Image (cartoon, rainbow, N blue to C red; front, side, top):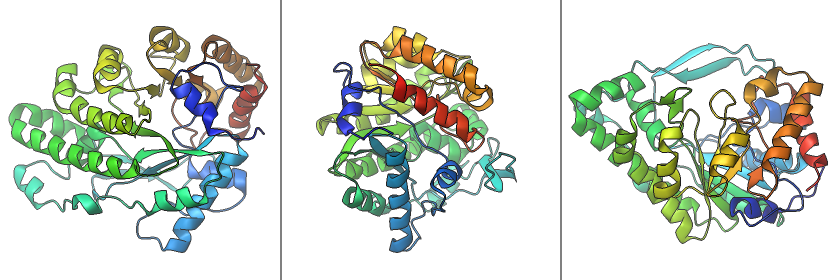
Length: 356
Protein backbone atom coordinates (compact mmCIF):
# COMPACT_ATOMS: atom_id res chain seq x y z
CA UNK A 1 0.00 0.00 0.00
CA UNK A 2 1.08 3.59 -0.65
CA UNK A 3 3.21 5.68 1.68
CA UNK A 4 1.11 8.37 3.42
CA UNK A 5 1.61 12.06 2.67
CA UNK A 6 -0.79 14.48 4.34
CA UNK A 7 -0.10 17.04 1.59
CA UNK A 8 -1.90 14.73 -0.83
CA UNK A 9 -5.17 15.28 1.05
CA UNK A 10 -4.65 18.99 1.70
CA UNK A 11 -4.09 19.51 -2.03
CA UNK A 12 -7.53 18.04 -2.63
CA UNK A 13 -9.24 19.95 0.18
CA UNK A 14 -7.82 23.25 -1.06
CA UNK A 15 -8.55 22.36 -4.71
CA UNK A 16 -4.98 23.09 -5.74
CA UNK A 17 -4.78 20.57 -8.57
CA UNK A 18 -4.17 16.85 -8.85
CA UNK A 19 -1.86 15.12 -6.36
CA UNK A 20 0.36 12.17 -7.29
CA UNK A 21 -2.41 9.74 -6.28
CA UNK A 22 -6.10 10.04 -5.57
CA UNK A 23 -6.26 10.25 -1.76
CA UNK A 24 -8.57 8.10 0.34
CA UNK A 25 -11.15 9.65 2.65
CA UNK A 26 -13.52 8.13 5.21
CA UNK A 27 -15.59 9.76 7.90
CA UNK A 28 -14.73 6.70 9.94
CA UNK A 29 -14.36 2.95 9.74
CA UNK A 30 -16.37 0.87 12.19
CA UNK A 31 -14.30 -0.51 15.04
CA UNK A 32 -15.25 -4.09 14.15
CA UNK A 33 -13.78 -3.67 10.67
CA UNK A 34 -10.55 -2.18 12.02
CA UNK A 35 -10.19 -4.97 14.58
CA UNK A 36 -10.72 -7.64 11.92
CA UNK A 37 -8.14 -6.18 9.57
CA UNK A 38 -5.60 -5.50 12.32
CA UNK A 39 -6.22 -8.80 14.06
CA UNK A 40 -6.38 -7.14 17.46
CA UNK A 41 -8.93 -5.59 19.80
CA UNK A 42 -9.05 -1.84 20.36
CA UNK A 43 -10.86 0.01 23.16
CA UNK A 44 -13.75 2.26 22.21
CA UNK A 45 -13.40 5.98 22.91
CA UNK A 46 -14.49 6.70 26.47
CA UNK A 47 -13.37 9.58 28.68
CA UNK A 48 -13.44 7.24 31.69
CA UNK A 49 -10.76 4.94 30.26
CA UNK A 50 -7.37 4.96 31.92
CA UNK A 51 -4.54 6.63 29.97
CA UNK A 52 -3.04 3.28 28.96
CA UNK A 53 -6.24 2.18 27.21
CA UNK A 54 -6.71 5.59 25.60
CA UNK A 55 -3.19 5.34 24.22
CA UNK A 56 -3.96 1.84 22.94
CA UNK A 57 -6.99 3.18 21.05
CA UNK A 58 -4.99 5.99 19.47
CA UNK A 59 -2.12 3.70 18.53
CA UNK A 60 -4.56 1.31 16.85
CA UNK A 61 -6.11 4.17 14.87
CA UNK A 62 -2.71 5.18 13.54
CA UNK A 63 -1.75 1.61 12.75
CA UNK A 64 -4.98 0.97 10.83
CA UNK A 65 -5.17 4.12 8.75
CA UNK A 66 -1.49 3.98 7.89
CA UNK A 67 -1.75 0.32 6.91
CA UNK A 68 -4.69 1.08 4.62
CA UNK A 69 -2.96 3.96 2.82
CA UNK A 70 -4.72 6.98 4.30
CA UNK A 71 -2.83 10.26 4.58
CA UNK A 72 -4.53 11.20 7.84
CA UNK A 73 -6.15 9.80 10.95
CA UNK A 74 -9.77 10.79 11.62
CA UNK A 75 -10.69 11.52 15.22
CA UNK A 76 -13.96 12.72 16.67
CA UNK A 77 -14.53 13.06 20.40
CA UNK A 78 -17.98 12.77 22.01
CA UNK A 79 -19.48 15.59 24.01
CA UNK A 80 -20.35 15.13 27.66
CA UNK A 81 -24.09 15.29 26.96
CA UNK A 82 -25.63 12.16 28.53
CA UNK A 83 -28.77 10.67 26.97
CA UNK A 84 -31.02 7.76 27.80
CA UNK A 85 -33.46 8.14 24.88
CA UNK A 86 -31.94 5.34 22.80
CA UNK A 87 -33.41 2.22 21.26
CA UNK A 88 -31.56 -1.08 21.10
CA UNK A 89 -31.74 -4.27 19.06
CA UNK A 90 -29.55 -7.25 18.23
CA UNK A 91 -26.86 -6.37 15.70
CA UNK A 92 -27.16 -8.84 12.80
CA UNK A 93 -24.17 -7.52 10.81
CA UNK A 94 -21.50 -10.07 9.80
CA UNK A 95 -19.06 -8.32 12.15
CA UNK A 96 -21.66 -7.92 14.86
CA UNK A 97 -21.08 -5.67 17.86
CA UNK A 98 -23.78 -7.58 19.72
CA UNK A 99 -26.24 -4.74 20.23
CA UNK A 100 -26.95 -1.85 17.89
CA UNK A 101 -28.23 1.46 19.28
CA UNK A 102 -29.99 4.34 17.60
CA UNK A 103 -31.90 7.48 18.46
CA UNK A 104 -35.46 7.31 19.78
CA UNK A 105 -37.08 9.92 17.54
CA UNK A 106 -40.23 10.11 19.65
CA UNK A 107 -38.73 10.74 23.08
CA UNK A 108 -36.41 13.45 24.29
CA UNK A 109 -34.09 13.86 27.22
CA UNK A 110 -35.19 17.50 27.19
CA UNK A 111 -38.76 18.29 26.11
CA UNK A 112 -39.65 21.15 28.47
CA UNK A 113 -38.00 24.26 29.85
CA UNK A 114 -37.93 22.62 33.28
CA UNK A 115 -35.97 19.67 31.86
CA UNK A 116 -33.63 22.10 30.09
CA UNK A 117 -32.86 23.83 33.37
CA UNK A 118 -32.43 20.54 35.26
CA UNK A 119 -30.20 18.90 32.64
CA UNK A 120 -26.55 18.39 33.75
CA UNK A 121 -25.01 20.70 31.18
CA UNK A 122 -21.20 20.50 31.31
CA UNK A 123 -18.98 23.49 31.89
CA UNK A 124 -17.53 24.71 28.60
CA UNK A 125 -14.07 23.72 29.81
CA UNK A 126 -15.23 20.20 30.65
CA UNK A 127 -17.46 19.37 27.69
CA UNK A 128 -15.19 16.81 25.98
CA UNK A 129 -12.07 14.74 26.61
CA UNK A 130 -9.29 16.34 24.58
CA UNK A 131 -6.58 13.97 25.80
CA UNK A 132 -7.22 11.81 22.74
CA UNK A 133 -6.04 14.64 20.49
CA UNK A 134 -3.00 15.22 22.69
CA UNK A 135 -2.04 11.54 22.44
CA UNK A 136 -2.68 11.38 18.71
CA UNK A 137 -0.50 14.43 18.10
CA UNK A 138 2.37 12.90 20.07
CA UNK A 139 2.19 9.49 18.41
CA UNK A 140 1.39 10.47 14.82
CA UNK A 141 4.13 9.98 12.21
CA UNK A 142 5.34 13.17 10.54
CA UNK A 143 3.96 12.22 7.14
CA UNK A 144 0.35 11.96 8.38
CA UNK A 145 -2.14 14.61 9.47
CA UNK A 146 -5.25 14.71 11.66
CA UNK A 147 -8.78 15.42 10.48
CA UNK A 148 -10.90 15.92 13.55
CA UNK A 149 -13.75 17.53 15.36
CA UNK A 150 -16.65 16.90 17.70
CA UNK A 151 -18.67 13.71 17.30
CA UNK A 152 -22.07 14.99 16.22
CA UNK A 153 -23.10 18.36 14.86
CA UNK A 154 -25.28 21.25 15.93
CA UNK A 155 -28.56 19.94 14.53
CA UNK A 156 -27.77 16.36 15.49
CA UNK A 157 -27.12 17.06 19.15
CA UNK A 158 -30.25 19.17 19.54
CA UNK A 159 -32.39 16.54 17.80
CA UNK A 160 -30.75 13.77 19.86
CA UNK A 161 -31.38 15.56 23.14
CA UNK A 162 -34.93 16.61 22.30
CA UNK A 163 -35.96 13.74 20.04
CA UNK A 164 -36.75 14.69 16.45
CA UNK A 165 -40.53 14.55 16.89
CA UNK A 166 -40.59 16.64 20.12
CA UNK A 167 -38.17 19.10 18.47
CA UNK A 168 -40.49 19.55 15.49
CA UNK A 169 -43.47 20.06 17.80
CA UNK A 170 -41.55 22.56 19.94
CA UNK A 171 -40.89 24.70 16.87
CA UNK A 172 -44.59 25.52 17.05
CA UNK A 173 -45.34 25.23 20.77
CA UNK A 174 -42.18 26.36 22.57
CA UNK A 175 -39.87 28.32 20.30
CA UNK A 176 -37.96 29.76 23.27
CA UNK A 177 -36.90 26.24 24.30
CA UNK A 178 -35.70 25.54 20.78
CA UNK A 179 -33.71 28.77 20.74
CA UNK A 180 -32.10 27.97 24.08
CA UNK A 181 -31.23 24.45 22.94
CA UNK A 182 -29.42 25.62 19.81
CA UNK A 183 -27.69 28.40 21.73
CA UNK A 184 -26.42 26.03 24.43
CA UNK A 185 -25.39 23.19 22.10
CA UNK A 186 -23.87 25.52 19.52
CA UNK A 187 -21.82 27.33 22.17
CA UNK A 188 -20.44 24.04 23.46
CA UNK A 189 -19.45 22.75 20.01
CA UNK A 190 -17.76 26.03 19.05
CA UNK A 191 -15.78 26.06 22.30
CA UNK A 192 -14.61 22.45 21.88
CA UNK A 193 -13.73 23.00 18.22
CA UNK A 194 -11.64 26.03 19.16
CA UNK A 195 -9.68 23.81 21.53
CA UNK A 196 -9.29 21.07 18.92
CA UNK A 197 -7.90 23.68 16.52
CA UNK A 198 -4.89 24.10 18.83
CA UNK A 199 -3.72 20.64 17.71
CA UNK A 200 -0.57 21.27 15.70
CA UNK A 201 -0.94 18.32 13.32
CA UNK A 202 -4.56 19.08 12.48
CA UNK A 203 -4.95 19.53 8.69
CA UNK A 204 -8.75 20.03 8.63
CA UNK A 205 -11.61 20.58 11.04
CA UNK A 206 -14.76 18.65 10.32
CA UNK A 207 -18.33 18.37 11.50
CA UNK A 208 -20.74 15.48 11.05
CA UNK A 209 -24.26 16.94 11.04
CA UNK A 210 -26.85 14.80 9.24
CA UNK A 211 -29.59 17.23 8.23
CA UNK A 212 -31.69 15.34 5.70
CA UNK A 213 -33.32 12.21 4.36
CA UNK A 214 -33.65 11.17 0.72
CA UNK A 215 -36.43 13.65 -0.15
CA UNK A 216 -35.18 16.75 1.64
CA UNK A 217 -34.06 18.28 4.93
CA UNK A 218 -35.54 17.29 8.29
CA UNK A 219 -36.27 20.93 9.11
CA UNK A 220 -37.19 23.66 6.64
CA UNK A 221 -34.30 25.60 5.08
CA UNK A 222 -35.49 28.77 6.85
CA UNK A 223 -35.32 27.07 10.27
CA UNK A 224 -31.85 25.73 9.46
CA UNK A 225 -30.76 29.20 8.37
CA UNK A 226 -31.96 30.70 11.64
CA UNK A 227 -30.75 28.12 14.17
CA UNK A 228 -28.17 25.77 12.65
CA UNK A 229 -26.10 27.49 9.98
CA UNK A 230 -24.89 30.39 12.19
CA UNK A 231 -23.25 27.89 14.59
CA UNK A 232 -21.80 25.80 11.77
CA UNK A 233 -20.40 29.04 10.36
CA UNK A 234 -18.73 29.90 13.67
CA UNK A 235 -16.91 26.55 13.51
CA UNK A 236 -15.93 27.05 9.87
CA UNK A 237 -14.72 30.58 10.62
CA UNK A 238 -12.61 29.27 13.50
CA UNK A 239 -10.97 26.76 11.16
CA UNK A 240 -10.34 29.41 8.52
CA UNK A 241 -8.74 31.74 11.06
CA UNK A 242 -6.29 28.93 11.71
CA UNK A 243 -5.78 28.59 7.94
CA UNK A 244 -7.46 25.15 7.78
CA UNK A 245 -10.27 23.78 5.62
CA UNK A 246 -13.66 22.93 7.10
CA UNK A 247 -15.30 19.63 6.07
CA UNK A 248 -19.01 18.93 6.44
CA UNK A 249 -20.30 15.37 6.56
CA UNK A 250 -24.06 15.38 6.16
CA UNK A 251 -26.44 12.72 4.89
CA UNK A 252 -29.65 13.30 3.00
CA UNK A 253 -30.97 15.48 0.21
CA UNK A 254 -29.43 18.90 0.82
CA UNK A 255 -29.96 20.39 -2.64
CA UNK A 256 -32.09 23.23 -1.30
CA UNK A 257 -29.39 24.36 1.14
CA UNK A 258 -26.13 23.72 -0.73
CA UNK A 259 -25.72 27.37 -1.67
CA UNK A 260 -26.10 28.27 2.03
CA UNK A 261 -23.54 25.68 3.08
CA UNK A 262 -20.96 26.80 0.54
CA UNK A 263 -21.64 30.53 0.40
CA UNK A 264 -22.68 31.32 3.98
CA UNK A 265 -21.39 28.56 6.26
CA UNK A 266 -18.19 28.40 4.23
CA UNK A 267 -17.63 24.66 3.92
CA UNK A 268 -14.55 23.72 1.91
CA UNK A 269 -15.49 20.08 1.33
CA UNK A 270 -18.57 17.88 1.55
CA UNK A 271 -18.78 14.21 2.44
CA UNK A 272 -21.68 11.74 2.32
CA UNK A 273 -23.37 11.06 -1.00
CA UNK A 274 -26.03 8.55 -1.97
CA UNK A 275 -26.68 7.49 -5.57
CA UNK A 276 -30.43 7.57 -4.99
CA UNK A 277 -30.23 11.27 -4.08
CA UNK A 278 -27.30 12.72 -6.00
CA UNK A 279 -24.51 10.49 -7.33
CA UNK A 280 -21.09 11.79 -6.45
CA UNK A 281 -20.19 12.52 -10.08
CA UNK A 282 -23.22 14.82 -10.32
CA UNK A 283 -22.12 16.55 -7.12
CA UNK A 284 -18.63 17.02 -8.60
CA UNK A 285 -20.17 18.56 -11.72
CA UNK A 286 -22.55 20.78 -9.72
CA UNK A 287 -20.28 21.96 -6.91
CA UNK A 288 -16.71 20.92 -7.74
CA UNK A 289 -15.72 24.44 -8.71
CA UNK A 290 -16.63 25.68 -5.21
CA UNK A 291 -15.73 22.84 -2.84
CA UNK A 292 -13.93 19.52 -2.68
CA UNK A 293 -15.95 16.33 -3.05
CA UNK A 294 -15.16 13.41 -0.75
CA UNK A 295 -16.16 9.76 -0.98
CA UNK A 296 -19.32 8.86 -2.83
CA UNK A 297 -19.03 5.09 -3.33
CA UNK A 298 -22.64 4.27 -2.48
CA UNK A 299 -22.78 2.24 0.74
CA UNK A 300 -25.50 -0.05 -0.56
CA UNK A 301 -23.42 -0.91 -3.64
CA UNK A 302 -20.25 -1.21 -1.58
CA UNK A 303 -22.01 -3.68 0.70
CA UNK A 304 -23.94 -5.76 -1.82
CA UNK A 305 -22.26 -5.76 -5.24
CA UNK A 306 -20.05 -8.62 -6.32
CA UNK A 307 -16.39 -7.72 -6.69
CA UNK A 308 -16.24 -7.42 -10.49
CA UNK A 309 -19.21 -5.03 -10.94
CA UNK A 310 -18.10 -3.14 -7.82
CA UNK A 311 -14.66 -2.52 -9.31
CA UNK A 312 -16.24 -1.32 -12.57
CA UNK A 313 -18.51 1.06 -10.65
CA UNK A 314 -15.59 2.46 -8.63
CA UNK A 315 -13.45 2.98 -11.75
CA UNK A 316 -16.31 4.92 -13.30
CA UNK A 317 -16.46 7.19 -10.25
CA UNK A 318 -12.71 7.78 -10.42
CA UNK A 319 -12.83 8.54 -14.14
CA UNK A 320 -15.63 11.07 -13.64
CA UNK A 321 -14.50 12.70 -10.41
CA UNK A 322 -10.70 12.72 -10.23
CA UNK A 323 -9.81 14.89 -13.28
CA UNK A 324 -8.76 18.35 -12.14
CA UNK A 325 -8.38 17.30 -8.52
CA UNK A 326 -10.74 18.23 -5.71
CA UNK A 327 -11.80 14.61 -5.15
CA UNK A 328 -10.88 11.88 -2.65
CA UNK A 329 -12.03 8.27 -2.93
CA UNK A 330 -14.09 6.62 -0.21
CA UNK A 331 -17.51 5.38 0.76
CA UNK A 332 -20.57 7.55 0.49
CA UNK A 333 -20.91 7.45 4.27
CA UNK A 334 -18.73 5.14 6.40
CA UNK A 335 -17.20 1.67 6.28
CA UNK A 336 -19.84 -0.21 8.23
CA UNK A 337 -19.57 -3.50 10.06
CA UNK A 338 -21.88 -4.99 7.42
CA UNK A 339 -19.56 -4.04 4.55
CA UNK A 340 -17.69 -7.13 3.29
CA UNK A 341 -14.00 -6.67 3.98
CA UNK A 342 -13.12 -7.84 0.47
CA UNK A 343 -15.33 -5.10 -1.02
CA UNK A 344 -13.66 -2.43 1.10
CA UNK A 345 -10.22 -3.67 0.07
CA UNK A 346 -11.29 -3.75 -3.60
CA UNK A 347 -12.28 -0.07 -3.38
CA UNK A 348 -8.88 0.90 -2.00
CA UNK A 349 -7.13 -1.27 -4.58
CA UNK A 350 -8.94 0.50 -7.42
CA UNK A 351 -7.88 3.83 -5.99
CA UNK A 352 -4.30 2.68 -5.68
CA UNK A 353 -4.16 1.50 -9.29
CA UNK A 354 -5.91 4.54 -10.78
CA UNK A 355 -3.47 6.66 -12.83
CA UNK A 356 -3.36 10.36 -12.00
